[in-house]
Length: 101
Image 1: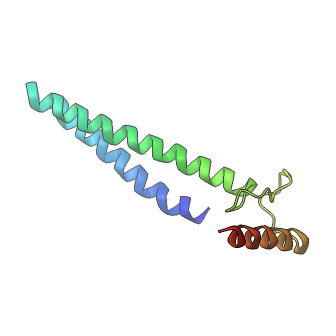
Image 2 (image 1 turned 90 degrees about the vertical axis):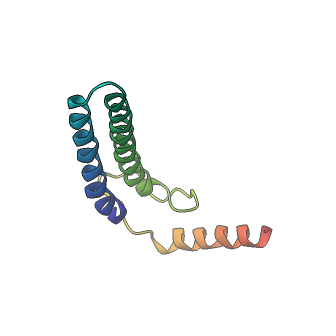
């Protein structure tokens, strides 16, 4: 969640910058207008994709841990801390993966 709190303002600033490039491109003529539109739409598109990716990451990180082990039962209370039994289980699976390598 803290990653999203950092990424969101940066992405919103780049979204505004892309819109600003598009408004400047509308005032130009011919090739410069085309290049400005392409750059502006690329910035806006990448910014929107980054917002969607950050939101997806924030939601999915509650359900699955770093190693894809399900750690959240689906309660609406948020992402609770793992209990001792599930921590031991996750640690055991991580050690097994290290031993295989």
